[in-house]
Structure formats: C-alpha cells, structure tokens
Length: 345
Image 1 (tube, rainbow, N blue to C red):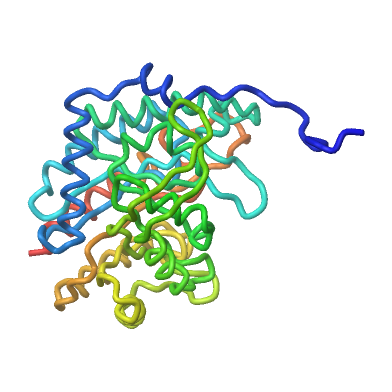
Image 2 (cartoon, helix red, strand yellow; image 1 turned 60 degrees about the horizontal axis):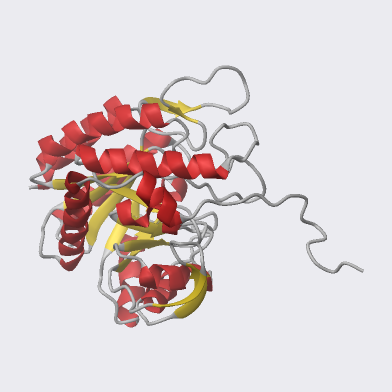
C-alpha cells in the first residue's frame, strides 16, 4: 500500500541554479554595480554615508518589457538625485498570498495558471542581469527559500516580508545572504517579531538546502549584521511611520542592543492601500529627518509607469500598470523623489 505522495498529482524537473547562472551570466559592469551598491547600502545603514536609501518600483513584476522601461527612467532619476538619495529598483518576483491569487512572475510567468516556473526563473534572472548591466541595482523579497539560489548574486538589497518574518527558515536564510536585508513588521503591525528576526539573522546557523548544482547539502552561515527594521504599518496598529511609532520601534531595537536603523515602507499598512498616501508618508519621514532623527535611513515606495492597479483576467492589460497593489505613477514618483532630494539638505 502506498504511503507517499498521495496528494502529489505531478512532478516536473527544476533546472539547477548553476545551469541558469551559466546561461545568464552577469557582466563585469553588472558585477561592479551590484557589489558597489551593497557597499553603499552598508555605509548608509552604518551612518558612514549620509544619503537616504530609497527602494522604488512596482509592487510586483509581471511584464519584463515594462520593467526595463521603468528601470531606464529610474536610472535617469537616480543620477539626478544621487547626491542626496541612493536609489534602487524594487524588483519583486514573488507574491505571498493570504489565501490564493497570482503568486508572481517566477511561479506563473504567463499569468494564466500554467506555472512554468523554469521560464519564470529565466525571466527573473535575465531582468536582474539587465538592470545591473544598466547600472541600476535591485532589491527583492526572498519568499521561497529555494529560489534565491537562482538570482541572489544579482541582488543588492533583500527583504523578508511581513508574512514570513516569524519563520525560522527565512531567518536562517537571511543569516547567509550576501546583501543587507530588511525585516518587515508582521501584518498586524507587531514590531517585536521583526526585532527578534534581526537578532536571529545575526547569528550562525546550520540548515539543509540545495547547492547551486542542485544537490542536497547542509549550509553553515556566519550571520548577517546588516539586518534592519522595516516599518510597514499593520492591520491592528494602523500606520506606524509617525514620530511616536518610530520612537517606539527604536526603543525596541535599543532594548535588543541592535543598531537603531529604520526603513519606512510608504505603502501597505502605512498608505492603507491608497497609493497617493505614500506622498504623505514621505512628507512625514522628511519632517522627522529634518528634525534630527538620524535613525530613518531608508524608504520604500511602490511605483509603476502608470498609476493605480488593474484586475488580472479582465480583458487586455494596460501596459505598465500593476496587477497587484495599486502604485504611484512614475511621473508622481519622479516629482516626489526630486522634491525630497531638494529638501533633504
């Protein structure tokens, strides 16, 4: 009598990370972009670089052609504000779902439930390589703990999301990642779990995973000292970007003997799903910075070529508009970032 795989209907082969990296190799220019951006972000988090870090881009990538066009515009903006703001593109390929829904470009690149994951991985790696070669560093969330092996070498900033911040395996993963990692507060707004995640990721861990050749192995990490707290609001607490909330978060970091470093996510619970309210969050964090709050070192902004959002599966998609959370338009984003740079001082 069978006792194994009783609920598995199909198994398909997954290509190995090493093969994909050979197919889509990073250029010398791209490698310099990625490594240089990681050093810059570390310097910003340490306080050695006074600029503000900004991770800006679509809620999720569903069309790589639109993503490249967005990146070209963002690269031009990055050059104009580079004295005050260090810009990365938000390049999210996976979407965590509370129940069900489109899971992102890697899982379902054809947007139709066909789940051509090998195709999605190729698209994701190619996009990250193209952006690095363009001279624009990228940030992404690590959701599936296997997928990072396929593209982590191309990422300059990583995130552990609100739904996985309590997960032991994600904390272990972050402890071995080669870039700074932001930990978001939980979806209900609980910050302490993120503080604990930062502490855990700073430590040595041993855990099973797959090598880049696809072989099972036990990984031993040295710990990641560039974990930092991302405030994104919550369903129970509401927005948590104001001075009272940041003071409370800093008290928790101080109690844990962690660096007092904050990133403000202008979207999600802080904008309460209204993209234009991200502009209010920017104004508030600017006021805190100008009032002498040195801990706010970074922000995240959800933005696309076209503002708003659209429903997947309801006719022809509008080019450059989000199919997940509603975003600011690029024009509104450009004005906001340029205005922020002018007033940062």
